Length: 204
Image 1: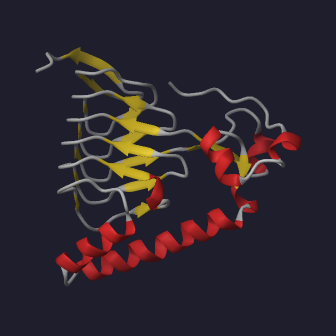
Image 2: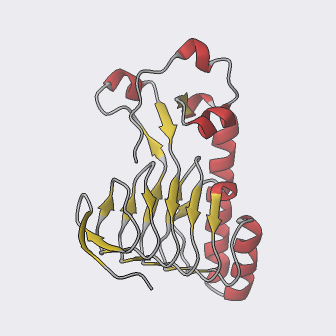
Image 3: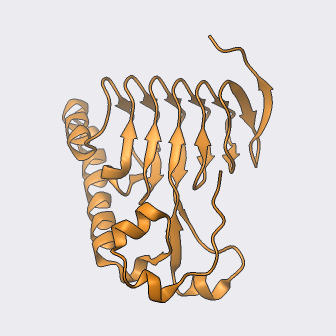
């Protein structure tokens, strides 16, 4: 379930290292974090390079992609071009999962995708969030990240968006164009913006 955040405790946060803040789901200012900026900028360059390589040599591009993302399970396939993967160390994909072209993962927090998942084209997984009502905090660049977890045997249609802090169970189908704002249990079909359960399906 999506975590509700209060105002940042600036004095307490100043004592914490940035990656611990992210792991704890705490507030931080990306614009004041050169370590994060360096990771994101480097990742953008690598993805752009891999996409360029894929135009003429798919095999080499796949090899480079697996070197870039250390935790891809057996037989994971990601079609090119890839829109972006900001933090490759934070992405964990189970065996035999498939991602169609246009994948975008904005994720300082952990993103975990299970086994045998089919993720349609132009799907986006977002872990960063900002304050919904305090415009001053947004102006100052405060944000926090919450992890995304997707179970085994899920199928997302094209253009699905999953928002921060969402957990999706096993054997879940999400209709094309849906925005998943809250957790979904096992064995359901969901669709819409925000995504709602349409019906339950029988488990194997």
